[in-house]
Image (tube, rainbow, N blue to C red; front, side, top):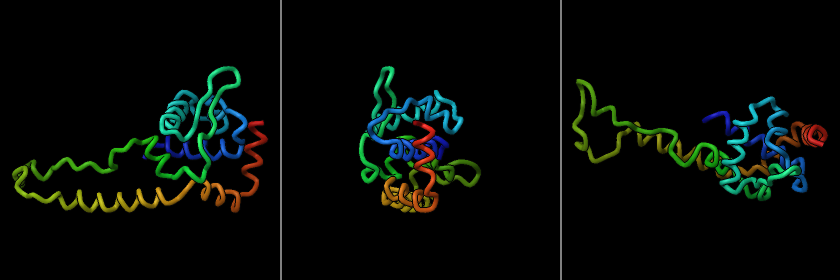
Amino acid sequence: MGEGVEWALHCCLNLAWIGEERAVPAVKLAGYYELPPAYLNKQLQALARAGIVSSTSGPKGGFRLARPLERITLMDVVAAIEGPEPAFRCTEIITQGPGAQAPGRDPERCLIDRAMGRAELAWRRELAGQTLAELSADVERTMPGVPGRIRRWFG
């Protein structure tokens, strides 16, 4: 998983703590973490395409959450940034080299592919089962000063 997922998750929480009444430019969000603005903007655009954030152009433009944190899962963010493709892609290497099996000889999927598919399904279910509201509550419980610090910095 790329670093864009981490950046996107932090930005979503920050936008929630800043409040829906205010749009935040990508360059300002990037500045808080000293990230490259152009690359963060790509992540934010991906979130916008997925309906997680909305963007407004103009002098007071920027990004804000498009829906409440309760309706955004970790999987929503991962899928927006990484796309729908599986994390593991079996290339059928068992059909190559001196011990090659004939392609299509075994009607079953590669056992490694099946094991990785089961693990990915469990991972995706776990991510889909946790909302950003729950994550926000965890942050607020363990680091109660963070939301206020975010609001002050962006204020």
